[in-house]
Length: 452
Image (cartoon, rainbow, N blue to C red):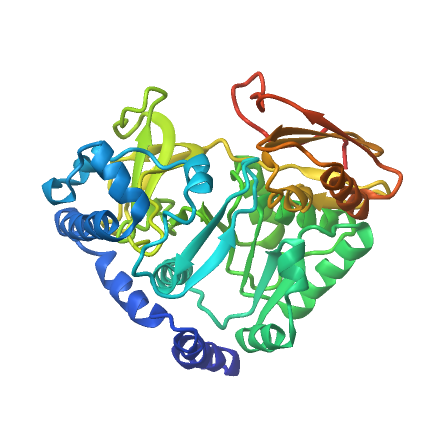
């Protein structure tokens, strides 16, 4: 065993579990349970999920003001749930409903709650809360999926990620933690040629066993390395984990070729949870012990496997702030075929409809479109938005207003955009009644007409 392998064992077996326990999370115990239950037969898994669903619905009906009212209005009795399909009798939860009922969605017996907000890549920023139990489940599900690929927490890792807020929060304690975990964060929003040279150099210096990031960001690094005649496929990288955007086939091929490794797709979000992850056999397995996924048509009816529709998620570990039949806005297809890997976890066949563009600053710096989304997502006056970059010096922002847009808010938007894109960029703000889809029928909330 090498010294590096020994350190990975120390981190995954001692340091990270201790870190989680100090935060009040039961992540280690949850991981052990998940690594056993992934091999259960489907009947046993479904019985386990049904028991947890009944418990979640019963607790929501007793302790969550929003669901006490909704269940009463819809004459829904959680005690009458006999099958997972009975979930279809519960009304949908939407982002708009969460915004309007954020306090009423908190359980009256909740423990400590932590405030979160989504990245806003759907154009609809969202503030919500999580309890410690849910965080433990989500971290454990991600940890399990990481191990599917022969890597573990503590292996050298490059992460191409982070909102401006997250990057500014890298205080000394977090830096120490990341050094112990051998994880290095590279900002996806700052991809100038000079920074990309530094990214490539850091990846070559660190020789990570895994990389993690947005598909588009990893492709951008790969293309830059190729232009500089720098190899990334000779470093011993085992896997590239990608998430937060739709992974296109050409991106998978480009990342695999550039980094010399397999690509593992992941699907989820801060709001809906860690929904699904790809195994080594190519199956996109749902974290079914914690997540119930329905696919619904335009009329709201649940679709069978093989039929496309909106992905609706019920997270079974959200008793403190329930996500029950939450409409994600994403489009996908369930799969009813068994996976050659032998796991009993159900699968998604396809995930459609998520795409976030890059934008180009006045000086040519390429950055992830979420860099602009983070400026808008927490503004209470804005219900939805779309950002259109017309030229390097011209950006148009369409906003659907939940309240009158104050002059100070407009100034805040323009100042924020100027800070990211350049002082010479003109930012036009258009008030619209609704954000319209593209001619293809898909929604895109960051659209750049500028070629990097």
